[in-house]
Length: 114
View 1 (cartoon, rainbow, N blue to C red):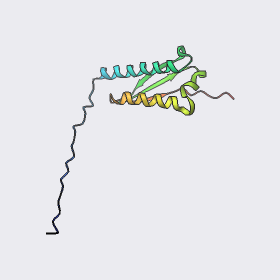
View 2: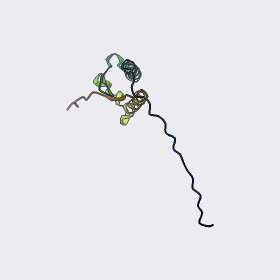
View 3: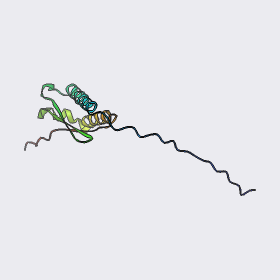
View 4: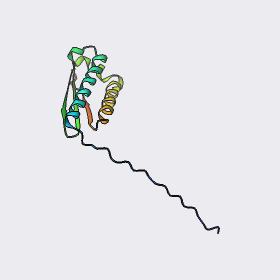
């Protein structure tokens, strides 16, 4: 009976997909919370909080947050090697992903003075 082999049965637990149908008003509240959170972070890390404006536009499942600031404050927004803006984008994306919304943070492009 050296040819007998033992067979193990492994069952994979399948969890039901979370319901992605969320009330549109709830999504709007989440987007506004994300906007105010982003604005609060920017006011704390930049020298000119009075020149900061955060607006957002909405797609099907994507929210684009557009940051407007004074051109001289842009370096503070980006940070050394882009670490500030990368961190901000990661936090906002994670916050909104919990609500099932994809978030993008855009910063202004300013032509370099020659």
